[in-house]
Length: 271
Image 1 (cartoon, one colour):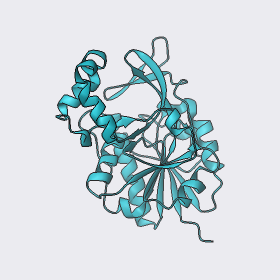
Image 2 (cartoon, helix red, strand yellow; image 1 turned 45 degrees about the vertical axis):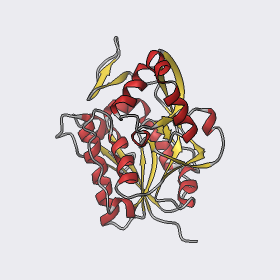
Image 3 (cartoon, one colour; image 1 turned 90 degrees about the horizontal axis):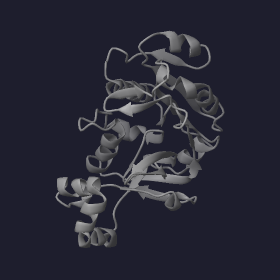
Image 4 (spheres, one colour; image 1 turned 120 degrees about the horizontal axis):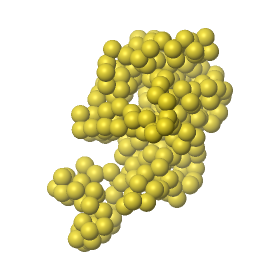
């Protein structure tokens, strides 16, 4: 059996040092016979790189940008270039705070899709209530769309943020994504989705030949734009293998995301 060649990794930095040992351990323990690891450290100083350069294949680049989001896009495009120049079949983009199960890569490759993700969760605030939800978004069904249109006034009163999105998109649901629930992915199904994060994302080289990663100028991250480009520019589908359940070390973060960078929590030491 021939196993496609995969480049595993992506941008890393000192900001996620708290998760790095477990992250590297999971990468090295992947049960797959044909992959290489490359991590690109875009930290401001060499401290993080010097700590890990002998433990895993790591290079330094990207710190010339002041914006963390620009650094991530730049580093992902370096990974893309390596995939294309060195004849890899896939780029497996893994976020530094995501812990992969050993069979993650084998399962995703075996699904034989151009773009496919595994599952990892984060915590989101909905109407002031924090919920654990997958970083995964789908489409609104026709019935769901009609129910929303029938209850616009109620939505305006109870979920003003979603109402503003509806107005911004002129109630055109093609530009709106629906976050999936924990119950919807509590299975081992292979499903079509609309958007996902870059935490456990396998992309075939045929996609990378046509698309680059690019900055999200609307204030979000590049994963939103990349998924949008896949669907709208390439007319391809994105899938999720719900049997690939990953850990996500978000509770351990000593900081939180700001608009274009990070803000450290009160009382925490800055990196």
